[in-house]
Length: 100
Image 1 (cartoon, rainbow, N blue to C red):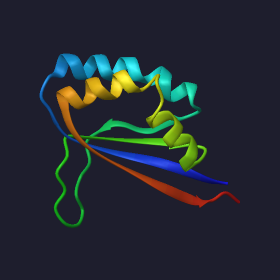
Image 2: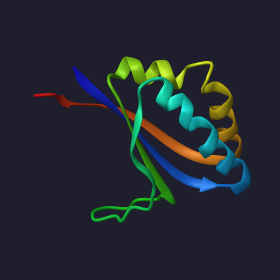
Image 3: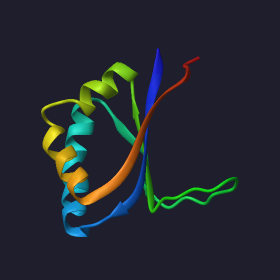
Image 4: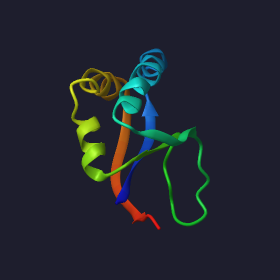
């Protein structure tokens, strides 16, 4: 089965207090759906091309279907709304390589 990776590019945080609440509050929902963090709040360095970001997050889930279950879940819904109210992010979901 191919794992899934959610790559979150955080462009701007307009309210640090709300965003800190989001960070703390949404973690249990990720764990509940079997996800984990591979990268959490890191600042990247562009080696090629232009890259706009203040922080990066990478989630790993067992499958794309499992990631979507979490992302659209009732448990995550209020946290997603909070994040959207206080930050500007881009999220991309990609399928990983086949496990050997």
